[in-house]
Amino acid sequence: MVTDAPVAQTRLEQELAALAGSVPDPEMPVLSLAELGVLRGVRMREDGGVDVDLTPTYTGCPAIEAMSADIERVLTDHGIPQVSVHTVLSPAWSTDDISAEGRRKLAEFGIAPPRPHASDGPVPVSLTVRCPHCGSTETELLSRFSSTACKALRRCTSCREPFDHFKEL
Image (cartoon, rainbow, N blue to C red):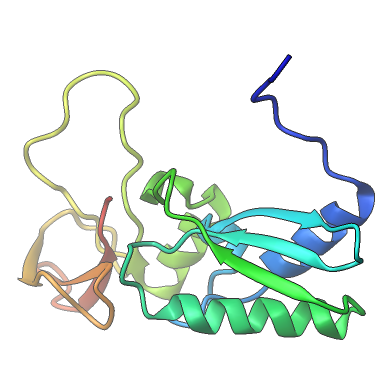
């Protein structure tokens, strides 16, 4: 009988997942890969090596190479002889994968976090983005792209401060 039930992780796999998940995102070092929600799985192999599944925030994300190298370094430094990081595109990453702690850190860092998607009900037609500096919802879009493709540049019309907004995906 074939089942799609998830395989329980061993204690060592959980420890290695925590180590890999603690790696800072190279584009937004205020977030760990676990908080960003891109770390999908860590599995021990029979040869003592480790396979890590990583999902980029979008298919062409240039940071995936840096993330992979950083994970390999952290796990190798922890005594794992061979680490293979695999890019997994399905299921696709969504801003809903960002943890509550990750959203809090983004706002604290001055980046407006994405709004969680409603699991049911209509999708809002307008996008109200709260200024991470003063809390006003009176903001305007300056550019659809900012320092990374996953962020937009906005300005608060109340405090006049520019800020990044992590776009909803």
